[in-house]
Image (cartoon, rainbow, N blue to C red; front, side, top):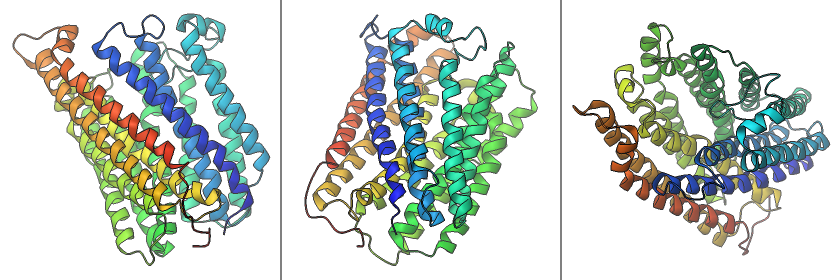
Length: 459
């Protein structure tokens, strides 16, 4: 059954995809600046391009999570959304605030932006991924609280399911841990210690709950497997994710001045972090193999299966490659970290948001699935983006291994910049893979506008 208020998810999904396009454009700009140092300088310096690239990633994924919640919670709760009007008001506030922040990064020198936005009152700026000015951070908190109020009230007045409770737990955790972005102690060790409480406990903690809930919801819809079976899998996955992810925060504490015991705690629990992603992969394939019906939306099934595989490879395997303290001693902060980050974010979070959009958007437009032509295009986009991301990861991994050897291990270590010259071939290859990824994203966009025979929503 479809609920009228689910329609508020559509603008969130559209904004997410639009911001995704912006993120990739700035990624390509940065990729060029790695090999052509003065590309677009001084109009877009590297540090600004990097801020925009990473901030757009976070913002568009948040739009995707919010849209997914607004679509899922009414269906899981079997009741209309508490306040569709509040959801739309918060959408415009978040979009305008996000756009104004990005324009601020691009048009105003960062130090000037800090002065203009009250950073002297409460210093929160200047930290990686948390560069947002104070008014933007406050705005994010207000939008998050209004959003959480809306979906929590919807859940309270309707049916309670394991999937909606896991989703709510993940979203509340997301909001609570973001509050640590306001805490910026003068001591650099303490600053980094708590900085990871936002960055790590988001992406390797509460976001994994959101990922599990979204994947479980889509798999119930496209496979027809009993809810009880899928919910049991979900419990196992989130337990593994929370136990390994929370204590696994220690793998960021190895070399920042934290106590030595974190090298053991971080190594042991980080080594276990691939387990929930492996379980997620087995879960997705198991559910699709046991499906009781052939859902017309083949593209959504492909995205769901791809999420499990790529999340396991990016977050699990590539995370494990450099997570043990004796290995991390040589690799931390190298291009190996960048390789892991790219595939992990794509596999775990980009793909699950595209999964829910792929499933929900046709229904929001009045059909069970897109036309066959549109789905063929969408599946082409899946393979183009996924293969491109594999190449990006492999090229960055090769660059990282060579970087570690030349800069940190060899008998005559080279300087950072001299090393960058030696590995520039891999950066060129990464840039071409990035162009391939962008083409895949454009194909994905085009697939929304391809017409053909469609099936009614009841199919």
